[in-house]
Amino acid sequence: MMEKQKVKKSIRTLAERQRAICHRPLKKEDIEELNCIFEKIDQDQEQAEQERKKKIAHGPEANA
Amino acid sequence: MGRVIAFSKLPEYLAKIEASSACRATILDSNILITSAYDVRDDYEDVRDLLVTLEEHGHRLLATVNTKAEYIEYRRRIILTEALLDAVDEHSELKLPSRARARISTLKGTIKTATQADPERDFVFGDAHLKRIKKEFSAGSHSGNIGWLKFCHKFLGGRLRELETDLQESGIEYISQHDSSQTDLFTQIIDWPEAMEISEKTGVSFSDAMILNAFRCSRCPFIVSRDFDIGYAVLADSRLKDAVMPDRLAREYRHYHFV
Image (tube, rainbow over the protein chains, first blue to last red):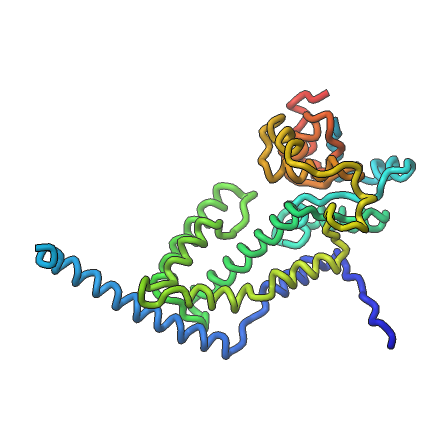
């Protein structure tokens, strides 16, 4: 079987290729998956904030 | 003691090297690797053309452990910066957590101000910025770590490796004394004490001192850099060889009266 010959890439187009790798867009399902996680984080942050406020409000009582 | 050779003087310099039996290989400093692959920088075209010329003249282009690490580190920050900034764009389909969005917007203003004050600076988040943004992807004991980890997985996962492979396939070789096929590239063993001495001599950063020490131990007649400190070190240290640098930097050393 013939071995596939590696073609050297041009240094002249290095920036173009590197940019393409960095900028490859996410798939729709990846965006949906992330949005689902982020939505939950938003809710959890809100809940954590409410709990923090509650703790501050009841702090002196709790410590008494 | 080495000399600083301006980019514009490269043809004459190469002719001299090629007339001798000097090794046809050079070490690329991290800022050269970054600029050659990041076309928003001012001197991108000069750097790209210089590398093309070196290749045409049969010079091997080498990256050391430090220059490669710094290159990958820079790319990591570019990918994360662009992903985060795109995600806070009003038309983005990605809906980041509100606190993360707010933090990114604030820090975007910070780097904007910094780049306006210093045009040499790239519009890229620093590591300290990224650490602060990362914290906003968690709701403490509620959501834990999943948000940031998933974000990294989707945007960085596999890409740093791809970038590295692309560099190698472009002819930029990683040199290592552990690679037995590269022993002909070195004259000495790379060791810590000499790197420390290089740093002690001019106060150059230790990362630069390690790059310069690898260069010193190599057969490469010159290093290519766009870092003022590298040129300064080769001019000040009798154990170092030449540095090829952009013309505007090469001119600056005149004021320092190196003999």
